Image (cartoon, rainbow, N blue to C red):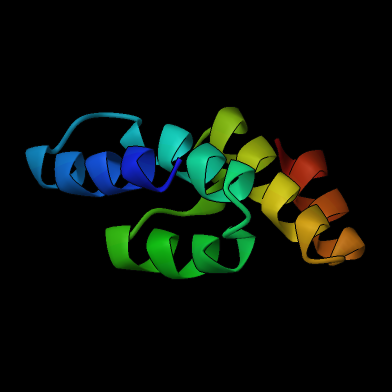
Length: 77
């Protein structure tokens, strides 16, 4: 799965719309939930910019036991 994340990071330079949604899902599914916020910051994307991104980011927060933050993000979606 790390190869998948590497590909998404390379595609990031191509300015593909909604790439961050799948990249966050890839990070979460490979056990790299702690990397999500840094990736969003680097891409200058807010977790609330789409409901899919909010959901995937909330999953990363749940993975890190940040349940209240995840709940707030899901409610905003």
